[in-house]
Amino acid sequence: MEQQQFEPMSVGRIFDKAFTIYRHNFVRFLTIVALIQVPIALIGLLSTNFMYGGVSAGADAGEQTVAAPRIGDPEMGSGTTVADSLRPAAIILMMSVSAVLALVGNMLCQAALAKSVSEYYLDREITVGQAYRFVLPKLLTLIGASLLVGLVVGFGFLLLVVPGVIFSLWFYLTTPCIVVEGRRAAEGMSRSRALVSGNLGKTFLVGLLAMLIAWVVAIPFGVVSGLCTKFFLRDNFMLATTVRHLANVIPQILAMPIGASAFILLYYDLRIRKEGFDLEMLTQSMSSGGEAGDVV
Image 1 (cartoon, rainbow, N blue to C red):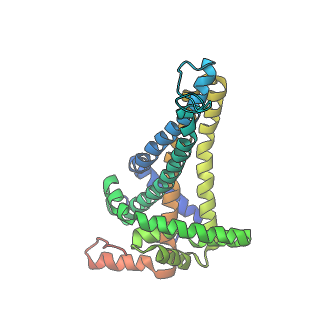
Image 2: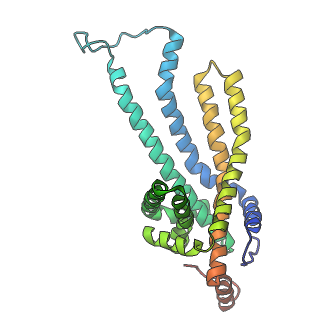
């Protein structure tokens, strides 16, 4: 493992180090994200095929071949099959479940990545399983923090756009504050605000560059997906849907660790600047014979 230097970092240095960490932990980071995002993508794919596959199949067939009971028939009622009457409720349920799983899955991925990047930065080893075992007990706290941040930021955008942006920057580091320091939801938000205050511009640049990187990574996959579905898969609904889902999930798997690395490095950069975290680590290293102790 590369020996880390605890020092203040510019935005450029943060991303330079983030890419270095990403290269050294490529397989582990992708595994962390794929373990969550691939099953969620499969559930979304099944939901999409359930919603639209039947319509497509019916259009291809041109007519019904199965005589199902209908409302209006002696058995049912007036012209709609039992399956048709239940289909809207099933679609709403599947869409709701997919949305909730996506939100919770993203939180878990971000938290596990935050733990993994943090441990690497502190010159400690951690496996994928250890990262998830560490963050799973914090899931309810992370969900609560996400809801609180969403409410506050949403309220800020209702007032004016600028307060919403400021609130989102204040709470940008809530997840690492919860994961690294073991804080509760409201405490993590307060801690994030304390670290970010006075560094809104730097936090904004880090977040903006992370989004731009994710966008750049996604562009080639979106282009290839669009060309394939337009010219080669127009008559194959299920395969076209699968290609579109892959074009969404693969860039997410590739880019999410970069953003996570950047915001963890920003977290430690602000601690170094405001709290002398580098001196704290040096003191711990000297007192323990060269190995840094736990950081809380």
